[in-house]
Image 1 (spheres, rainbow, N blue to C red):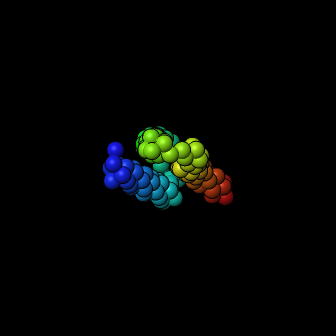
Image 2 (cartoon, rainbow, N blue to C red; image 1 turned 90 degrees about the vertical axis):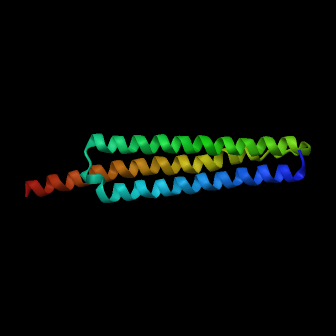
Image 3 (spheres, helix red, strand yellow; image 1 turned 135 degrees about the vertical axis):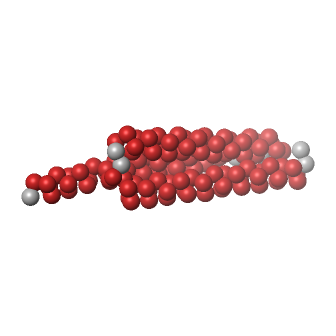
Length: 126
């Protein structure tokens, strides 16, 4: 592999990771806005359905990002014997941030759905 080919594969892999992260941010924001605007009005089944689709898509993105990070690690290890041992930490940080964001957004959806129900009950009593 020439230096140009190595740089091209490395740049392409990094660009794909950036694009996948941008897609996640877009879907994450859409889910948060959906939860904020209509979360209280959704039925339990609708809320579970939206959360399931969102969770499946997020898991797929995490998998793709992890695979690209491992590809970069293999490229660095194979090309002229470069050793980049701290890449294993990067394997966990990038997807880990996405997984934490996903968990917090699911918790937010559950809180938004539960909160108005308590307000509706207190309004009906008075």
